[in-house]
Image: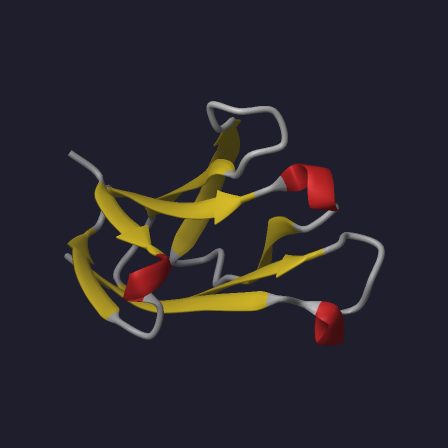
Length: 105
């Protein structure tokens, strides 16, 4: 069972064993142009495994963006995600998400 974070978990710290999967699920409405993007990750400790989007039930409604990471080796990593338009700079982000992951042996 993967360790799952949601927007309300921003600012928290999670301990996971090496080899575990971590998921981050965040609400997103891509039709607005704003999409969640990885803004920072220590890829020596965590490695991105991809992301997917599950649309909402109505046209143009918010859906769920799911990012998947693997805890590769013991250490501490800060994972930063931003909700922004890809063509704009980080100052234009609507929301930020940050968690600290401590990977244990």
